Length: 78
Length: 415
Ligand code: SF4
Ligand code: SF4
Image 1 (tube, rainbow over the protein chains, first blue to last red):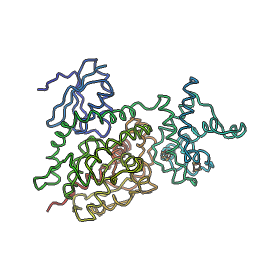
Image 2: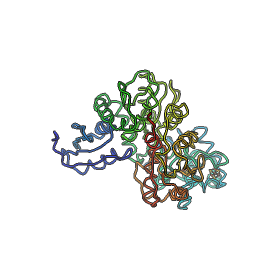
Image 3: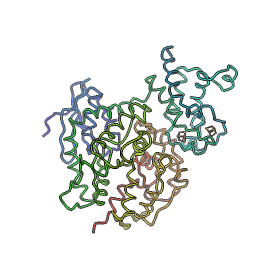
């Protein structure tokens, strides 16, 4: 069980550079402010990319989990 | 357009007027030799997609604001900068991949990239550049600060790749499979975000018994794609600082053409060498540090020269040398090396989406691949790989698009 209840799941596994961040930035507007997107990815780099993107876009990475693939939980803040 | 913005744009233009830029803007004889050289024109053919056509959009502004004499201005079709003309400036900047194929046909060596650089800077000043590219560049810059908080998670993810690296090359035990923060390493390997950019490279470097370290940063430089020199420098600077901190001998850029060009040719003097991963593989094969099994690649293979590595970096023979060790069934595409057609996805177009234009403007590339009869289309740049995969699907080319690193890692011989 994840620590966060996601409002939307975004499967970004196996995408080439820079599509995970591009898709995330397009999709963030599809949830309401305060809601959470759960991103599924296979990119180690996304664990640094998404927090940096959140910093510049004013959103928030709540946390991440690593298992068979990587899960990153992002809250829309604006 | 407001007078204040117009003034700012003219000043921006003036700041970009280096000696080289002036020479390129002054010296076009309209001979037209570059026309057929552009893949976008050759695929369409529309005159706005010629090198000279794109350059004229900027040259005509140059005539208006930086040249003297009313008659000369009229003869040279000088134009006023207004909102409509900014659309032309956008076309100059973002229908061109910066492949510089045209330059090799121009008797004056006019560098479309320099003229495109002026167009991109005008768009940035007018806040009209593609926001996706700026967003990606800003993310990379922010990472210089956020990295300390995210290093641990990245290291854990790198550790999680071990099993997949070991499938390609069993390490002898004791050494890190995906090492980070290795002081005095020979190689700082700078990857992209995806694991496909790390796993084959790790297996190859471990097989060669290299003392290497994985960079915390991504190689790609969106500051260069968007055309902002200050951001380009800042993004490259993160990697340069990391290499200095670790006292690295050689920074090896993964299969990313733009990253290679920025680090090798646009980042000034550095206390380390810069090479692309294809060069490192070739070195390992040449020195007998890795052995490759040709039976792993029975299909007919061709190779696409990435513009930023080949035409602009001179790396033609190293990938071919490696392919010569991977297969006896290699076929060149025509033309190749310096004259190779651009894949049509450079200059930020892949990140921006632009699928219709990318497919339409790269028909010559698709035809060229098809004519080889190859089953495997190998390349050494992730941006090219994405565009070639899209072309493969769009034009039904029936090839398998592969990275040189991945083909190599799959063929490693372990005694
Ligand atoms: S740099 Fe490449 S895309 Fe741009 S005009 Fe020249 S040939 Fe065409
Ligand atoms: S080949 Fe060079 S000189 Fe001739 S039209 Fe093209 S840019 Fe101008």
